[in-house]
Image (cartoon, rainbow, N blue to C red; front, side, top):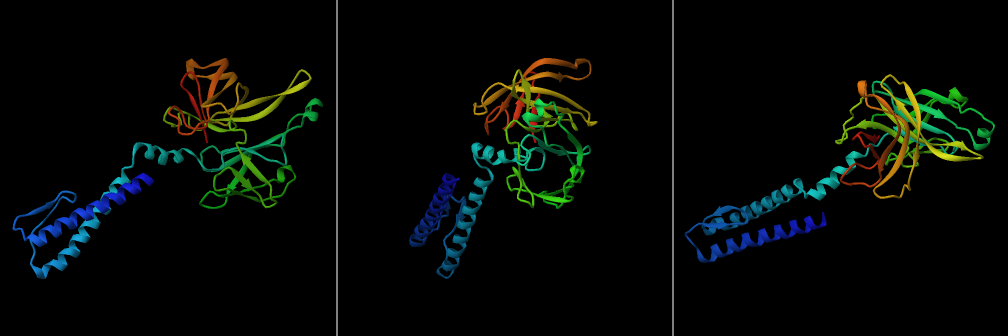
Length: 312
């Protein structure tokens, strides 16, 4: 934009200079012929001495108006690079949907997503179990379809009733400007999609259009026992339009610092529909973690069959 601003200033100055030069030349030589100023594409004729002062004002008005219009035209039609940069933020959905990390319950999770019908939110909550509790074979307790109430028109506040687990009622959470944090009155702050791959996803085509309305994929970090220890896994929840859940898992195959993608292996993943429906034992999905790349937006899983999961 600095380059365009400099160019506009220079173009306007050049236009003013050329226009007044034409006027000055015409005034001193009293040419009877018509003088055309190329930069403005306008025509002037010789004036009497009584009209010269008015002419200068008119000329200045025309020059400034034309220069302003030229600047507006250039700003309305930016370069291709700037158009892409300007459009990029529109991909980022600032809202409550996502997997939220609660530091008071580091082994658990809170998933907020649109309810069926798309007019309200619901939450799935679990405080999780620690490694010690897992060794004691304690079962994780999960609460589903907890109503979440929006408080205002700008989608910056919500109210949650935690009485179902012995907590307070009507607790107000305030969403940060970047949509990545949710802060409550006691100072506790939830963090959205902490691990980059975790979140709520819709199934989309290459343009980002949702091709299976009402269905979601929820990815969140988890752990499971392996021999005498534990290993980190990715829990994958497949939610259909009737809120029926299928739980499977995935494994991260590389560093989240990889550019531009990191691969995940999904196990026993249902694919296709109708007669083409089947369960793949292993499917590789590539997660794109570079903004403004030419293949897929940031936070998009791309699968071999062309299917995409787009993070909400």
